[in-house]
Length: 163
Image (cartoon, rainbow, N blue to C red; front, top):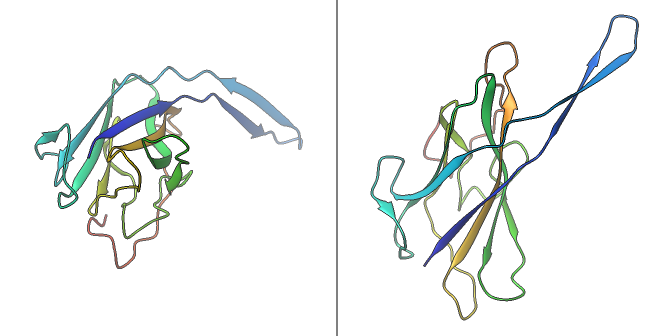
């Protein structure tokens, strides 16, 4: 099985309420994320893989170049087969939380610029190709109050890595 990783970039518009009841909108131009993607066996420090079998636990690692005042944010991940007409299937939502807890875990942040996603049960799509494409929206978002603000995800019986 082969895994292809993709990256998408977005702009950000911040709306701030002011005391007189009005709103000021400021467009923040985020730096372009310069990231490296890798797939590892069993976890973030496992052997880096270029192909795998269905019996291998995978860890998708995204490591980006630091940008002062910004944090990595990974969201909206999909998987699809490589064949023609294969539609993307959502596995991570806009908050970095899994939508398929038996297949993928929530996005885990190792630090401000490194994230990963455990895939304890690799998947395969029907078709002539055994390859799987994995796409995520990877953005650098402004720090709020000097820290990286991220949504918390709910853990359930399928998750193995809890905060």
